[in-house]
Every structure is written in structure tokens, then in C-alpha cells.
Image 1 (cartoon, rainbow, N blue to C red):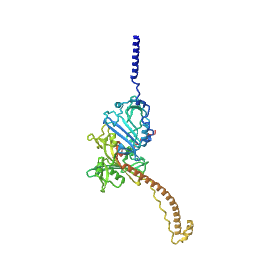
Image 2 (tube, one colour):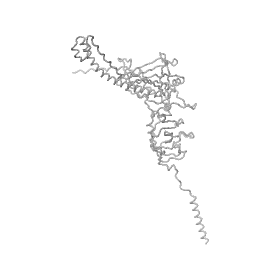
Image 3 (cartoon, rainbow, N blue to C red):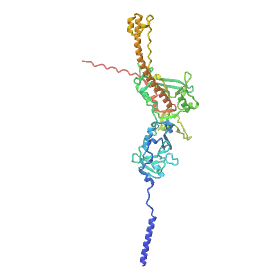
Image 4 (cartoon, one colour):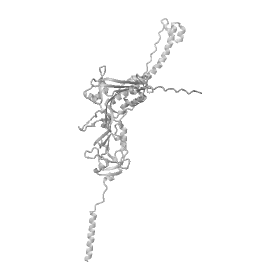
Length: 518
């Protein structure tokens, strides 16, 4: 009996232990939400790339421990680049392509869930001031017209041994995923603007004037100059240089091509805004008010106003100027200012950081060779005028023939009727009059035809004048607000003069005497 009770007691204890174990045992782990999102899009509501009206890209320079910003936005009916002095952007199509390339990105797999892992994947927010990590990602934000975020990513480093795959996370999430990315994005200033500065067709060029001069800064006067004048009738004619001794000299065609191509293909690499008062005066075209601020800004960039022989003032620049004329009546004046060295970002919009004051300032001119990692560039000031005398084909109005006067002794009635009848009925002065009358009638018929042709040609010419004036107006509106920056290479192509444009004429090859015939 006791043995049976003991057995039952053991069974009861075992049963109780089993029940306790069942209730005390932890439940099966539930996968976190970050796993459930694998395979889903980061921003499923972003379905139309045309909705994107603002792009902001923030990259981190680990060497300088500072963030770099680039942005494009559509505001007040214009595309502009806020991070580049609000310079006009040609951004609609490019922004749409960029938006399309990051639309529909999916979470391919989970890489990590904790913020502590962000440095490992290089997805630390470049704007996170609380993080000490230098391994930060690139933050790309797209917003709609209301300023609401359509997509906001932080893209890290490429996944090892997986081309096209990167670590990526939403800026408002901690979890890091792996995604396949084919990003169509550029943060180069030149890729978002109309880089062709002058918009000049080399075939349209008919005149180039190069003026290399020296300036006496104290007297505010030009003290010496070397001028070269190139011209041609049209784009298919050869260039001619004023003062060329054709018996001994000829043009250096390689340098001519370099000069013309330099004007045709001049590209903007950076911009600086002009003082507002200077921009306003340039747009009005009624003279410039040279206040101290304007003079200072011009002087820092290598420009000033010098006195002319007539007592007026004219814009001059440290490295001379080039005037280019087209058969559309457009006259470009290019003034070359100071040279300076800088990084790509400094060249684009300036404001190299001043470590002493912690503020930003424009770069100082640097005539020394560029240091490693820096490029040499130069300031450029551009103005445009219109000259209709450059437009070919202005017609000359034909003169109305003058009707001959009848001799006094010819009855009025006899001056009427066919010329043949007049000739047969009259002799002497009357015959001469009849001849002149016949010639007059023929001339009148020709005049009517010439007049119609003249009016058609004049209309075509006036349309060219209107087009040229409109082009100059548009160009001046574009140029008035900005100092431009061009590369040192672009400047060297235009830095010509008689010394480079002319070479000694080649001696004609001596004729080899014919072999004697045996």
C-alpha cells in the first residue's frame, strides 16, 4: 500500500513539474517587423517621378569632417540650384530621371537593425551632429511641390562582392537593408545647367578682336596694348588678320582653330552673383553707378573701370579682353579677371571655409600653380551688344524711274499713245523724247519687279534684326546677374595675340629637275 502511494506521489510530482514547465517555458520568438518588410518598397506611395520638385543631396567629406550640400528645386516657375547661389538650372528632365532611378527601391534583405551598426555599413546620417563616426552615407531627399518628402534615403557603401548592391536605410528608420541601386544622379554643377556659356555657333563668327593690354592701377588707365583684328565675310571664307604681311607671313591655322573652338565650346564651371546694384544697372543699360561695394567686388575679381582718352570710363580686366562678332549682329565682350585655385566645390560656388573664424568667405586669387587636388580657374565678365551692320543681306531700295519731259513744241495730244506712233509722227526732239518714253516705260515695269523683291528681302532682313535684338536681350538678361568662372584651359585657348596667330610663311618647295631622257 505504501509502495502504491509512493508511486502515485512521484507521478503527481512529475505531472505538476511538467505543467509548470509548460507554462514557464518561453514562447517561440516572433520575427521583428524589420524582417516582415523584406521584399517591400521603401516608399510605396512614391509612384510618379514627375511629382519631384525638389532634390537635396548631402554627402560627407571624411577628410574635412564636413557635409557637402547640393540641391535643385522648382520655385516661382523656374528651376534653380539653391546650393549654387540659386543659379538657373536646366533640371526638369534630369530630376525626373533621378527620381525614376530611386523610385520603387525594395528591401532585398536585412543587414542590421541597430544604430550601432550604422558606421559598419556607412549609413550614418551626414547631418547627425551627435555621431562621432566619419563613416557616413549620402542622404538623398526628394520632395513634392508642397515640401512633403516623397523619398528620403541614406545610402552607404557597396555590399562586398555584390556589384550594384548597397547598404541603404530610410532616414526615419534604424534598420539597414541591402538593395540593388542603379542611381542616375549627378551633383556636378555643370550637369544641371546650360553649360554652353555664349551659345555661339563658330560658323556664325565673322569678327574676333583680341586686346591684350596693361593697366596702371594708380592712374586707372590703360598704358600699353597689343591688339589683333580677325575678320571674314562668312563662315566658309578664310580668316584674315589686319596688318598681315602676306609676302612673308601667314596665319597659324592651328591657333585660329583653337581660338574659334574656344569661343564655340566655352563651358561654365562656376558662378558668383554680382552686386544687386550692378546687375540692375546692366539690365537697364543706362550707365553704371560705381559705389564702393561694386568697385570692391569688381577689384577682388580682377576688374575695374579705366579712363578713356575722351574722358569717359570703360570696363577693363587684368588679363585683357576678347570681342567676338557674329553675322546675327551679336557682339560679345569677354573680360578675363583674376586666376585662382580651388576644389571642384570651391570653383563652382566659392566660399572656402575659414578655419580661423569659422565662417565662409570667397577664395583669394592665386597665381601660383594649383596644389594637389585643386584646379586653376579664372573669373569672366561678359557683356553683349547688338550691331545690325554685321547682318549680311541688307537690301538697297530701288529708285523710281523719272518720267521724261515732253519737248515744248510737241502738242499735248501727240504725247499720248504708243511710242511707235510718236516716233513716226515726230522728228528730232520728238523722236528722242519718244525713245526716252519707251525706256521709261520699260524701267517702270522693271522697277515694280525690283520693288517687290526689295520688300521681300527687307522683310527677311528685318526679321533677322528682330531675332538678333531678341537674342542680345536674352543674353544680357542672363549675363547681368553673374560673374562666371571658366577653366584655365578655356582661358588659354582664348589667350591669343599676334605672337601666336602669325608664323613665317613657308618657303615653296624647290622643284626637282626632271631626269634627262636618254
